[in-house]
Image (cartoon, rainbow, N blue to C red):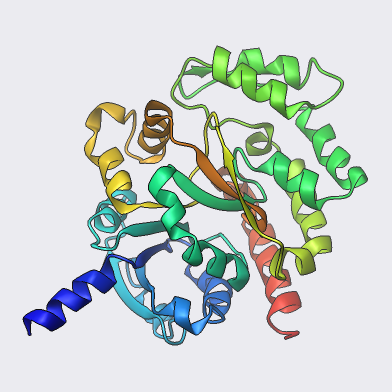
Length: 324
């Protein structure tokens, strides 16, 4: 018995805990579970799927991806985000993933992450390139979109007027939008780094532009084959000013450190603590070159345009799943 338990402990140290956080759109899991079901058999043995759902949604997750260990845990309908994060950071697996309900990418990207988990020992996190992710969006467009598509979105960025919001003075960023004739993301991020004094540095024109969201999703539909096909993936090390954490892979103990450090918090979420720990530690971010993921809308946009979000999701399902 002692030998068996020791063996299981050794195996567990090499495992990855995927913490999936469905909330108000539990039906979105079907697309992500479809791709998780296509993960290589040997990689499925290395992962555990924690479905951290809300309220009465448990029945929707009765068919998890085949051959993946899955455990569904229900949380109350009240503000439960940090309850889910506390649960996730107490898992015994060496590596963890935080996965929001509205992130979609291929099984090939999943396999690449699983097979490169050890790279997280010397980095803060690993992530594919998210379509509206901060700070990934400009890289997403540069690598995937045509010049005309990219420029159409950037033209919408230039229309965004920054103000004082959530206690942060973002007005210095207007020199890169309404006062500029060309969108220059590198210069923009230098201003965020040097002139935005608040902890909330996950600011980008995409978060304030309905039309930019619409265009990115429209153009993304032109590139679904590239997004969901096998790619020549590589790991790129980057020093980021900030990242919004809809998805990330991380060492579990490092994530736990961020949660335990109450001096890093400014609100009830873990995004600022994880970013502050990254900056404090000097650890790089690992970005998967040619590994793309779709994040359709930020919350303020999806709440204004809920039907657009659902229609976009259904369009992807129709194109990707139903035509296989």
